[in-house]
Length: 104
Image 1 (tube, rainbow, N blue to C red):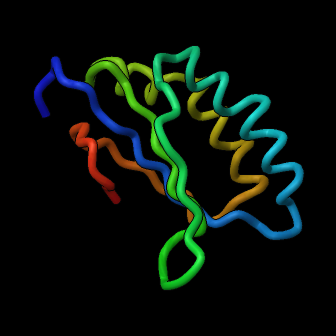
Image 2 (cartoon, one colour):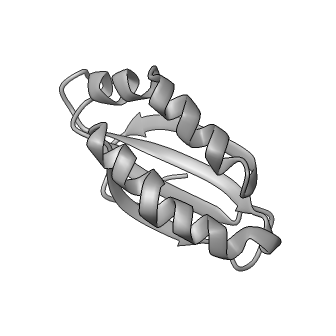
Image 3 (tube, rainbow, N blue to C red):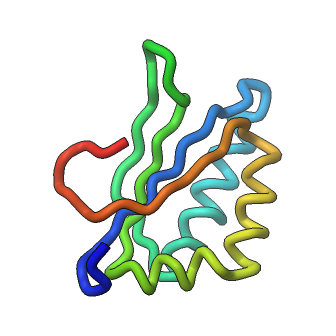
């Protein structure tokens, strides 16, 4: 990945049905604002309604790979995702070069 181009951080996971209300409160009230404070702007979110794929695909964009990696190396990132795991299973993430089209 070129160091000067934007990157996407792709998060995938399944939401535990019994925690859906608490999940939304946490994601909108804490997760997204904290990610934005670390330089990762929410770009899009998808809900899988059919097929064998994770329930959620959430995308954040960073100005460049260095910004994204700096965020991923923090205790805040670890803490946020430890808290997220109270509401989800099968959490995974990856960095990819930014493209306007759908990426998974």
